[in-house]
Image 1 (spheres, rainbow, N blue to C red):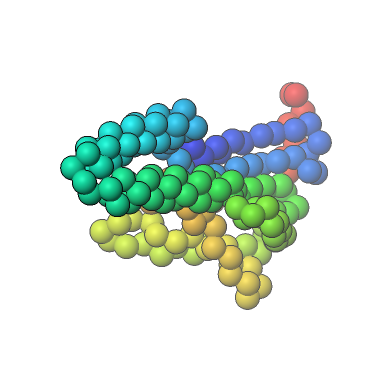
Image 2: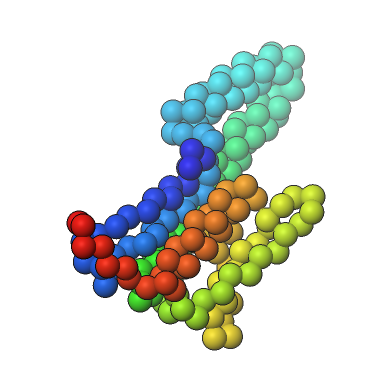
Length: 177
């Protein structure tokens, strides 16, 4: 997808462990490092010039508050960029469905499911579209693609359903290869 999320499907010669579906989901960020530097430079210059005007008028504390505003905005962007390090990897093979989630702090959590026993559950809002997507297997419920938008979740859902159906059909023999 063009919104910062990568979904790809792969095949392999080894049919027993061939990846039917592989998706690496990352949070969307509309501002790259160059854009961040440009915004911060612009904000710093405007705040400094405006602060100097207030300083010349005798309101010297305003200069400090403008500097504080720049620092708070810089900190908010850094927190946002740190949260962008999170990712979720979903891999479907004929024998398993693996979900690997990496938090923004680098903590890794992994789940493995049998694709024959997995069921997908959706929560759809009529105004906003697909809000939540869950994997359900043997009493366990795991939310997927939490940071995707409704259209992206719908596209991801369709690809995952197709992959799970292919895994349930099992490997096929093609002698022409």
